[in-house]
Image (cartoon, rainbow, N blue to C red; front, side):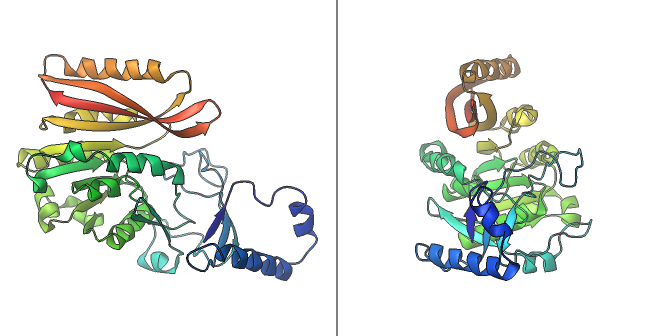
Length: 331
């Protein structure tokens, strides 16, 4: 698939040219563009679309927030991208099978997604690489007992970096299309994966983990994550959590208290808290986050330090997508 930048074909002379020709001529044009682009691609390109920003609200003029981050503004030009709608109960296996799935490779890791149904943020490649460079944070202890948690798993953006480091990963995601992309991507990279959904969500946590899969994905709200993790920790599992990822914009703050509690049984955990922050406000926000965690650490024998602020990419003029690395440790 060729995914062109936002705004492609919306300016003169494209608009006047396209208005003056029929559908057959347009099809020939799109086919020719794909043919020319294929000369530089590793594989023939069969589909053409134009990327657009992820809308804040659901399609159709509804005021409800687009919490699934569905790319409803995607403009498709050539090729079959699959069904445009699914049942109210969510996508079926037939929907998955009839949808276009594409893959790319970043940092030597495959990622897979359905362009009609899930976003792909190529700008996160630097943050994925940064996590891969944190091998020193997973040294020591029993390798089979080291864990990471991703509370906004998506298609596995950061999940796969933790898996590459050798950690077992507990994930939460509410978009079934993202979960299916994560499953396919994990398989492509050679990692075992279990999707926990439907009736399986009522199973005891120890039974869910009994298969020893490296990646376990709960298709449910991350509001359930703390309860599940504390249940596992009470049974002696997932007590050594090395990393917790909170990759939600514009802010992941609603999950921060839970990350503090999830890390209670670990001697040292690194939290990666994603935020959109004004370009001149990063140090102010850093101090605020430090103050929040200092309050939680009082009289607990634990402490936290905002040890790094990573500027991932510009989100909008004057706004940075930042990651605040918070090291939580025993005193």
